[in-house]
Image (cartoon, rainbow, N blue to C red; front, side):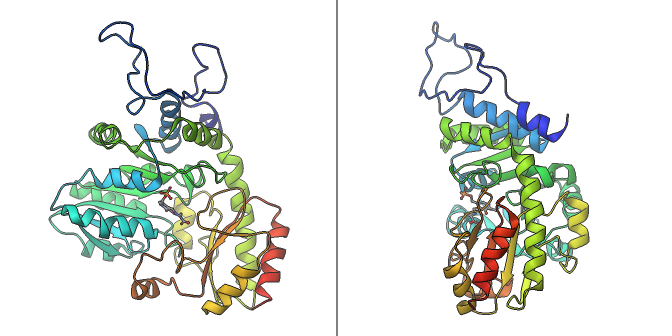
Length: 379
Ligand code: P1T
C-alpha cells in the first residue's frame, strides 16, 4: 500500500460500538471488567487506551517498524530510548542535536552513569573514532537541528549491525514521508509528534518506533512503568494530523525549495543551510536518502543585530520555538532552542548569534517570501 493509504487507514478500524469512521477519543481512566481476570484487553488507561493504540499502529506502519509507543513529548520518547541502556554504557550522539536532547544527556542521563560523546555524525570517520568497548547506542539526528547536516545512515547502519549495537534516529525534521530510517538500518526511530506528524501546532507528544521484539517489549514496559503517556485527546489530534501528512509535506517541500533559493540569492544573507541546495555539503547524500528536502531552513545574517532586525520585523512569519506546523515559524536557535548548548560549542557548530531558523509553512509561498524580503531589507 502507498504512504497516503497507510496514513489514512493503518490502525483505523471503525469503532466496534457505533461504527464511527474516526477513532473516538476514549476519555476514560479505567475499564469495567466482566469478572475477575476477564476483560476486553483494556484494564487501566496508563497501560492501554484505544485512541493511543490506534495512533501507535498508524505510526508503526508509516515508519515500517514492528511497534510504536507514544509518549507525552518528544523528550520523553528520547528518554525512553536512553532508558534501554544501563549505567556504564556509552552513547555516540550527533553534536548538533536539538538543545533539549543535549540537556537530557548531559544533565539527566549522566547522573545515572551513562556517558556520551558528541561527534559530527555526517563524518563517518568521526563516528568510528568515537567507538569504545562500552558503546551501546548511536543516536542520530538527520538533518540536524538547526544546521541541517546529513549522516550517512546506510554506512552507520552497517557499522552498528557489525558491532551488534543499536542505531536510533530522530526523524522529526523529515517525517517518514521523506525519510524512512529503518530502511537504511535504524533499529529505533523517534519523533517529536509535536512537529510534522501532528502538523497543526496544537499538541505536544512523542513516539518511539521499534524494530526488534526485545526493544519493543522494553519500550512498552517503560511506557507503562514510567508513565509518560500521550493523552487520548493528543492521540486523536496526531491521528488526525497523519492523514494529511503526505499533502502537507509536499507543500512544505515545494515552499522550502523556493524560499531556500530566494535566501541563497539575497544580498543580506551570508549562508543558507538547506539540503536541497546544490552547495550543501551532503546534497548528494540527501538526494539518495530522502525523497524530498522538507521545510526546515537555517540562514546566517552575520550578526545578532541582523538576526534581530529580521526576527523583530516579520509580520506573517511568527517568532516562536517549534516547527512542522502549517504556519511559518521563525526562531533564533542561539537564544531559543539551543540556549542549553554552551556558547563555545554553539559557535563551533555554526549556531552563531546571526543564525535564524525558519520552519516553512504551507501558506502561499509568495506571501512568505514578501514577508522575509521586507524584514531582510530592514537590516
Ligand atoms: O518538544 P518535544 O515534543 O519534547 O520534542 C523535542 C524535540 C526532539 N527532537 C527534535 C529534533 C526536536 O526538534 C525537538 C523539539 N524541538 C523544538 C521545540 C524546536 O523548536 O526545535
